[in-house]
Length: 550
Image (cartoon, rainbow, N blue to C red; front, side, top):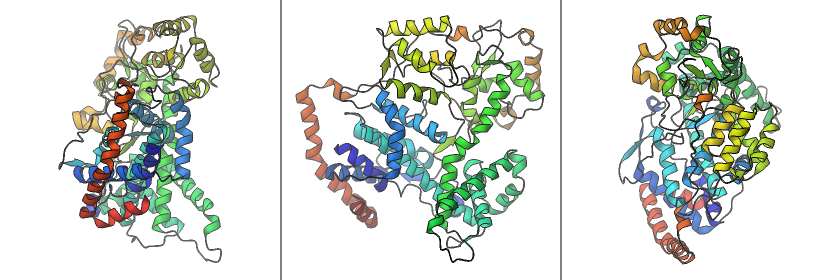
């Protein structure tokens, strides 16, 4: 359990330094530079120290993470030692943040580039820090694989990283509202600060004080759902106040709140805003589903844009953007192009991207389907009948026609009777069983973009669909043909892709494994000492902090 102990302690030791800032003008800068040599030294030094000492730390937050990850981890493919590979770990972290917070953490996307963690003295932009940390930890565990607690630590480290960003943006929100850090705020003033925090954190707000005040006054023009969002903020603040009711001074005439109180409220906002705002995603889905009379999970592009002509403001992406993001079905010339509803709703085009470390996106409803299967089966593979039983017990029911059942049997035959739970073919099968919840898994090659990234690529004029393109789709011959219950069937591709579960340790003999395990113990003392000395030279206070926390 040495690795699990050390990794758990990482949550407390490693990350308070990553989000420092020295001026208000830099608070929203997603391109601040951080020295990779220092990040590597402090992270590696902390890991070596805690791995070598074996102190166990318990924490309620870590327990919460464990309870969420446990069913998923049990069902994941593992190496011969019961650990998961780096690629499976990335999948696990991606699933956790998606279903808990509706976050897509930068560096953990399926299409994420691998950061070069071998550079000695190079700087790295702030938004690349999560995948840089990921790369460093992958180097630590890539040979033997990630145990359950190592995966818990990766999640905890990333959550700590984002909370440091919350604190920094709350500090800036105090500045934007002309409050000092030591100010005690009444409830109305707290709402002003929390509103500013949401605007700069989630809605691409500016860091200029005068412009920010103008943006707040006109926020309803920019974000039509602001009034209901403000009610969400009131609920968060009220919930925090209720939870701390037993710790306040009962004799105080007026209850006031500190910077720390406000930061905790903002943390709750960042964690809950994605799941709460998912009602907007469901509204969009419902608007599209009304055109899907045969429950194929598809809507004609003409109908997609027709809703815009009829007054909807959401569906403005040009077909080129939809295609780029994997939300377009062009498999049938006779039916014409169609929008894949689940791919569109859970796609990157519906993400908010102000945070340097993550984007808030629509919840992928298929995560709940997988979680249900994982809890019932608790194994990386299952028979076709087990899968039928598990999806059949879903509350929303399952669309399992004889043809769809035959597809599952063919997947089982391909894998000698046992279907991989996390393979591409089962994900594709689930798309046809739950067409409005589960996205279609493309074969690869996609590198989806957020609206912000698309705008940067094509400019503001090309960001939204043109009136001419809408007219062409509405007048096309395919738009006048009735919708078909066969829509999407031609997208069934019998090609499998599996998560790579093996690690280098699987390829070594027991003797080789013993030598591999012995070598780090011989090196840990000297390496840890050197890293520790290096950190102390850079900042003696941090070396002291690491000693204390370990």
